[in-house]
Image (cartoon, rainbow, N blue to C red; front, side, top):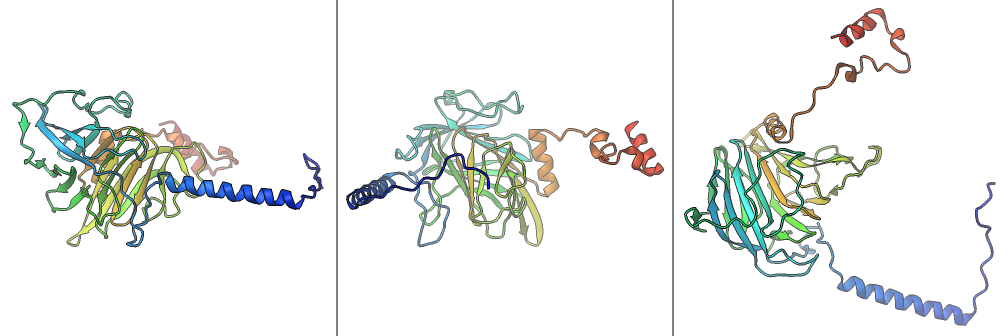
Length: 353
């Protein structure tokens, strides 16, 4: 039997007084712990049962001004309705930027109106830059807040001013692809924006099928299932364990729906490299992020192949693979000599091309 690092010694005999004192100390510690847990803020639960509706954070924001920019985008400012200190102080003033960047892609960015925040560097992922912060609203381009719809070729951005919410619809079939409206019965909050806690949600139809939110090892593969945990917090680990975050973070999902007997697809990307939890309840989806900005891209589809094409047109196409990477040279442990002449010659021919 292997020897132990520390030899085992018998416990000393405790007196009755010592046992009583330990019991009192344990009871006091448990009482203090219960008091701390009772007063500490808790993360909102993902349980959407009627008997345990998750707590909501704050009252959201209201839109105070909006204008059209010179490049065809729209710039707006939001003010917090009622401040609270759950997970830190609310950022009082936010800037909203909306633009139909292409006929198939819509961008919606929300950030601090006063101070720059961490974003995926534009040098690493080249893309259009929004207007600089603290840009004043031009009277000549100012729009009445009652104008609540911004239409593109195929996507329509609609908003409600107070409390602020927005939705994205597809013109061709009238489907609502994203809807942040929060009512009293919904299990999620309105927009929450703090220094180290961001929350935004969307309603979903019950028959939607979602795929994505990598890179991790979910037991069901890339299909999302209600009430499963989806955490994006990259770790350089192997993929042999379930429910484990892997090397890359891809906060994008594809939504497949049956619309009048016809299949339709669209994609949603939250371009944010901070750690996040995504709660999918079947009829809603909530992002809870620990920093950065809300930078959403919507890809109209309408086929899965279209979504992939539109997505990779933004983030970049996959790099071409060299011939040897397809395995014609990787024949360990037998080597090329173990191949039949036809296979051997075919491999050599492929490598020479």
